[in-house]
Length: 245
Image 1 (cartoon, one colour):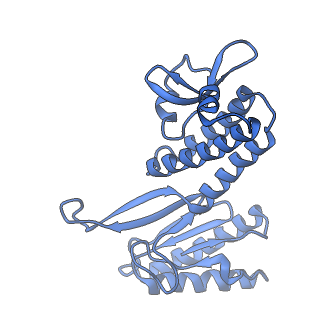
Image 2 (cartoon, rainbow, N blue to C red; image 1 turned 30 degrees about the vertical axis):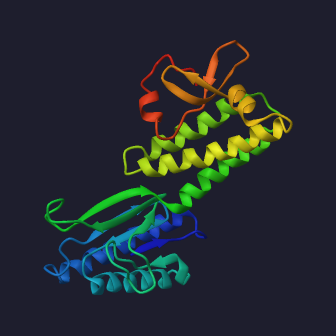
């Protein structure tokens, strides 16, 4: 079960959640065996209750509703989600989103996992969409700006986003984002030179650097070369101290 509140201040929610946690812990003590393995994760105005038995989760949901009702607070149905991490639960797809991540389990053979499933944590669809929209907005706002200025702005955004997700299952997501951003940048370059052919545009904005071809790169005011960081390559590039971001 995933609970979030977007209206009440985080401070008040945290105070309320402290009381809710105590009530849930008291409930688990009354059914110790059945409630073994119950997980509570709280961050800001977000709360996750995890257990293999849906009846236990539903009971926790009732405790949360009653506790908030005593405080004259009522959450909308959209603010409480019950989902299974492996199977479809009602109308909910497997998995749930939490703090920008999607947590989900996938069935695999016994050779891959004795449990018959693997847990994967990756960027949520909403986080991916929001990140791409931020990148696209920056590109649109730099229609006539020098290429180096655009690259420096994008690198800051890419670095911060990738650092947050790089330790999880994000490789395919990073590659997909790089492809989308390439298409956006190609449109940016074409609009700047409507009378030039594709080869000329590619030669002007995408350079060969070392063994890497088609690097979106340009020359800054100080004469140094800057290149756009790819999401998929940022972890390796960050180790290169000579890289000028």
